Length: 159
View 1 (cartoon, rainbow, N blue to C red):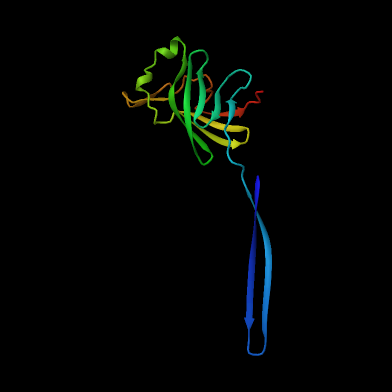
View 2: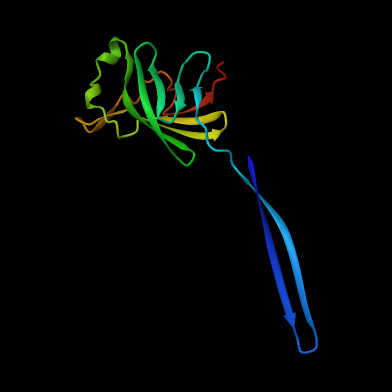
């Protein structure tokens, strides 16, 4: 945390016909501001078994949706403590991934949201791909890392 220091001055005057008084008080106030939010690194619900989400920076995110089948490149926009992630393009596809209509998937409607809980814990909400031709989401429950609709991911200690 960063510490911001402010000095507050309070001055009071009292005046009466026969006497006058002035007082001065100075106080230091410290405000703790949180560290800047940093999602960089690999995030997974199980760091030993699943690749999950690898964030190089907000504009360069790789998501392993399904092992050996669907890897997508994405970009994120930070809004408060939440990273809103949009599809950019399929990165690497296996046979199953090749069967999806990638040209119809929106690059403007989010596929996932990550909310920072602590420095090493985030809550990931997988939304799925938005098919513009159908006006509906697809692949909302098929991602390997889903155990529930919203899942807790840890920042993996990769070296």
